[in-house]
Image 1 (tube, one colour):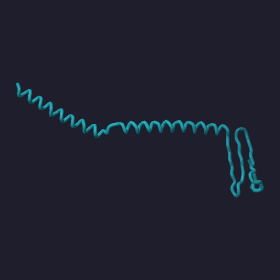
Image 2 (cartoon, helix red, strand yellow):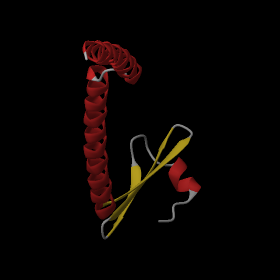
Image 3 (spheres, rainbow, N blue to C red):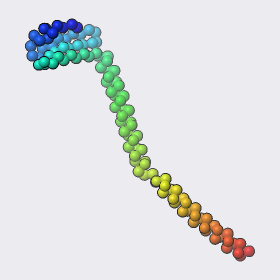
Image 4 (tube, rainbow, N blue to C red):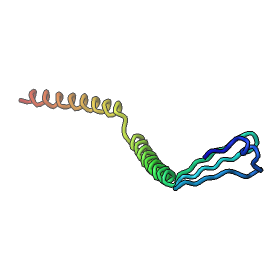
Length: 108
């Protein structure tokens, strides 16, 4: 679409030039000193809506996965605590086994 600047300046308030070609639309309007040009395409709009829906679905799945991860992380015991408990249990079981073995050998 070709519109001269003079034609744009002579437009009354709220008026605009529009043109449609197949699925494409264009609108040229002025508001004060600013020229607004809007272009749309039906098939492009459908693609935008499709990809927006995909984005929202993926975002929701990611947020759900993240909340599950945070919940599992809160419930999980600290690896340092597990290591410390295993060390203490190992030491005590070693001491107890040593005492048992020594007392059995002394009885023989």
